[in-house]
Amino acid sequence: MFAPVRLFFSLRRHPDVGVVAAIMAVSILFAATPFLIPAVAADYDVSIGRSGMLSAAQVSGFAVTVFIAGRTLRTDRRYLLIGSLGAAAFNLLSAVAPTFEVLLVLRVFAGSAAGLLVWLAWSNAMRTSGALRNVSAAGPLSVLVSVPLLAWIANEFGAAGVYVALAIVSLPPAFLRAEFSGYKRERKGVSPSRSNVVLVIALGLMT
Image 1 (cartoon, helix red, strand yellow):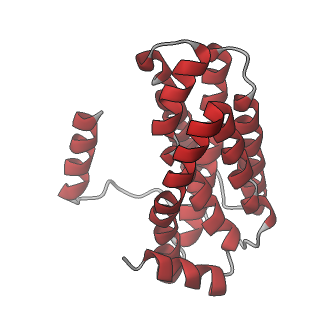
Image 2: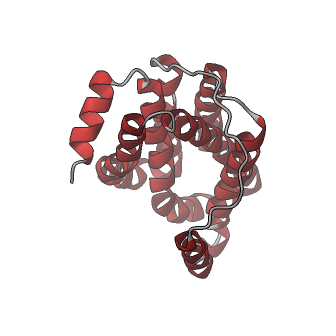
């Protein structure tokens, strides 16, 4: 309920507007999946089940990148540029992919770019509780606002139109303000929280 207010203050006061924009772009990317699967199935004449592989490919690239980045990289603005421009490029190429197989590969790379942006945003936000709240509010609000627009774009312009829209929303993080202090997460023991175990099991069952 307070997401719009938090996002407003994050854009007004937060020095890392580019980080907030990165979270928004990635949230919109994943919000587009339900509209892309049937659109791609129609455009490339494949089954809905096969088209659904796009989601798995995208999430795979995302997960691998977050895992590696969190253990090997330090926060730096250049990664914001790489993730933002990479996401824009792979989304734009997805709009003109000649075959479904090529599109599948492109979605792996698009997911990787999204993973880089999310790792960077959350790592940077962990420095202060205020930044953490601002970043966490950006995702839900982005989905709320973008879903009707994504549905309209998919209906009017098909999968290519959605991918072009995703390319456009991926660009702002590269040009907006963001400050980084070279933070790198220290590896610690596994969290003793039992809720983490419950969450992982629940996600596994859903998958």
